[in-house]
Image 1 (tube, rainbow, N blue to C red):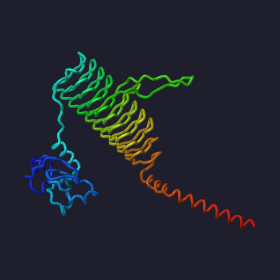
Image 2: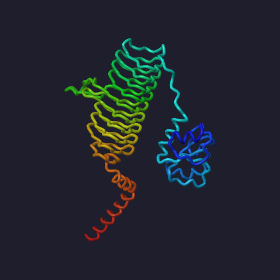
Image 3: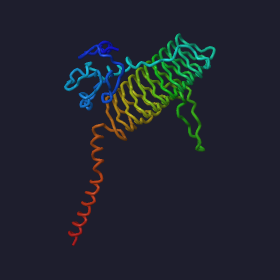
Length: 344
């Protein structure tokens, strides 16, 4: 594709030869002629001048000193790069139609132009929207509803009566609508399972990573808001409400009955205790443990979670603890010697 056309498609301002042929997308330090790359962070500026890429997507104010590549300038280089990947490396969806090795209930409803792979099982009363792609070995339970333009990758299990909106992407191995972890303790110490048979709703434009599990509750519903993006190996407990545009990185764990408001960002391995509310825009750094609710706009770290700036100061002190311990021991020794002299 000509660089001029790419610039037009991405809405970038072109500086350089628009007739350059670009075929691939590459990292700034490994790109070759024919590649387009991007610069979105200051730490890569030193690699900018030496890149072999034919074109670089950069910010509006980035100096081009020493760089011989053509430039595509934009105020959002990372977003433009994402669109360049989609443009130059488009996914190849499977052909439409139903594989004869699939098992589809007679009363299931499939929209036009769906693609259903081999060994897919679709239960009674389920419905699949138009243009949705279901890869091999997926199970969609009875009464579940999947919207239009969804992509459901291999080994996904969608349990009965789960409701999924439009343009939802579910990566390999995820389980939606598994039973929540709920037990009642008896007088003899044994536990009786509380049936978890209520609803799970996944709203539009959600993406769910590989091997993520989202549980259904005993009553009410679990709900994932529109535009939320969930990474791999995330556990969302029963009765959790997740707002819109939320981001969960890998291995986040949300215990039951939590409320996660819009635009929350939880980095990798963050854990949230049950019945906690995280206000709009809360951010938590990696491995933070959150046992209590956090007000809107909070930025927390550590366990138990505290304000991020306070955690940074505490972490600095923690590194000095061995030296502080030695100083205290020395002071105690000197104090004991002084007291002994005074007592003579």
